[in-house]
Length: 404
Image (tube, rainbow, N blue to C red; front, top):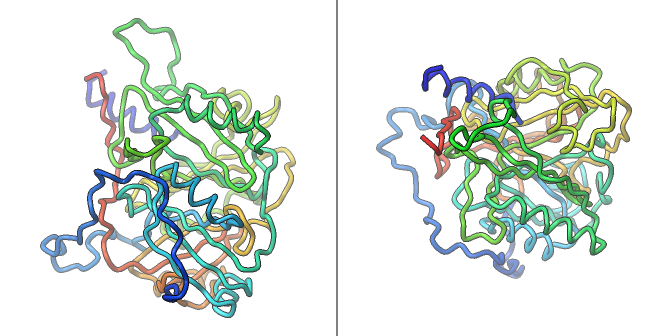
């Protein structure tokens, strides 16, 4: 097999793998406990590259981004800021919505303060928005069996997966509600046969962590890298990146109910739905599958940034359904956001698809947006963004082998 053909094969395999500001009287939270020394300062986009199209960076169609933010309701703000600070996130923006505005946008009449967190300089995808509700509805999906309907998982690259495993494992032993899998080996080529010293494996180690407020999937690459897809600043405490992709455990009558992601939002399916299950070592370990358990799987990505991918899991066997608690107002992961420069056009498309969006309004940061809930139970906020992100989105996987 030629080098070029091998690269194309690896790329194919990888694709299949795994509003208004706070008032001056309101104090900002303390800086996150993360060392950001050595990080470049954000610079404005170079107008010389704009040409005649002010949205040259946005791509075609709806110009939708990958998943921009995970929206997480929190009760203990200081604890959440410290936690995500240790995972490499820093505060970059804060805002507020009055009860009346929150009712119109989120359907919950409570004042809410928002804190946008960014990992390093990565502002095109993989960010976090913490929502601190004055009157939260409840504790959301909460701690439960992996694969509970309504649960969400945030995937992040790390350079030290065994240290992360030991941290969460020890916290569980100390009485904290964490369920932790062992790091499992996943071959990039699907070939786990024995190899000699000079025929080195290429793949990942992956582990999952399930908690009371949020869930993680951490992965560490070896033998290859994908520039732009997982960016780890080594001066962060736990050697973790922005959020690269997102898992959704949902219940649908048919996988066709996910088609609006392509037809309306403009995302692209990575392929047809596939049936996965306990016969696969990776999923068996990461999702704690019991013998005989399986699920339908399908993933989607933006044509304008392959980072920020969405992966949907539909369990075949009965699972507890807490999807009604997976919505703004509760704590835990309650929504995800995208951005586009063509907000009004997309709003009209969502209306025509009878997905019942809210009217366009300002969110906590003063950004024009609308919110709607998909037929599978996911809550989305679509944000208008006219300025190019600082870091370049990536349009395709550029696999670089480390031993070549």
